Image (cartoon, rainbow, N blue to C red; front, side, top):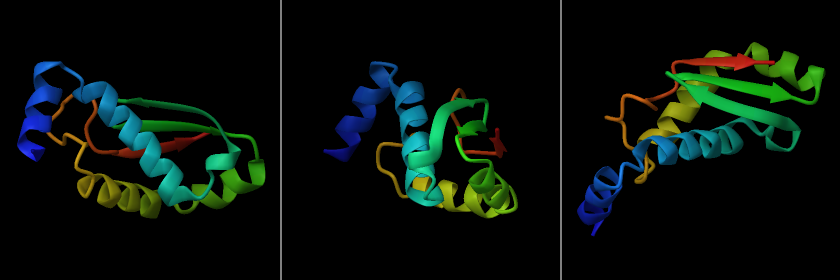
Length: 97
């Protein structure tokens, strides 16, 4: 069944959009800052996050590398994430605004 779902995602060209949504879910699960997140944008391995609290942004700023590792570990265990999609790959950089 898992193989059929992956084939469907590829044939319908849903991988990029689905990967982006899975990256946002990884942010929510790993950062703990989902209630303070105003905007999210993901392109070419860069995740841009706009936060409503400068205090939380400052705290997360020093944890960027750890957060990227946690989110990528989260994504690697996600069955719906397609790591071979070049338009929406694993997270390479986290940019907080």
